[in-house]
Amino acid sequence: MLVKDVLAGKPVHEIYSVASQDTVSDAAKILSEKRVGALIVKDGDEMQGILSERDIVREIGKRGVACMSDCVCDIMTDKVRSCSPADTMKELMVIMTEGRFRHMPVMDNGKLVGVISIGDVVATRIKEIQIENQQMAELIAGNI
Image (cartoon, rainbow, N blue to C red; front, side, top):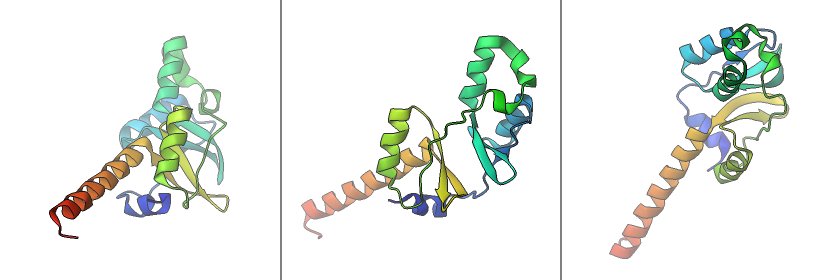
C-alpha cells in the first residue's frame, strides 16, 4: 500500500503544527488537546523540524519542568526524515524502525501534505496480513 492511499483514508487530514518560537508548554497543550504524538514545527510555510512527546519527556528528564518555558526550536528535531506519497508503507516501516522515530512528514513537490505515524504503518500492515490470510484461506478451500 502506498503512503497516498493511507493519507486518503485518514479521518483527519489536518496537519498540526507549532511555530519554532512558541514555548514547549504551548506545544504540549496542543499535543494534549489534539491527542497527537508530534507536531510539525513551521515558520510560515517552511518546515523547521518536528517536536514529539518523546522530545519533551527527554528534556523534562534532563532538566525538569524548567524546559517548558523554552522555545520549541531549542528541543525539536531539526533533521527530519520525510517520505513521498509514492513510497510504500513497507518502506516506511523499515525507515521508521531503523531510525527509531514514530512520525514522518509526507512531502509532495516540496509541500507538506500529511504526517504518517507508526500507528498508521502498523494498522496498514495488519490490514494487508488480514487480506493475505483471507485470500490464502479461500485458495485452500478451493474458492479461488
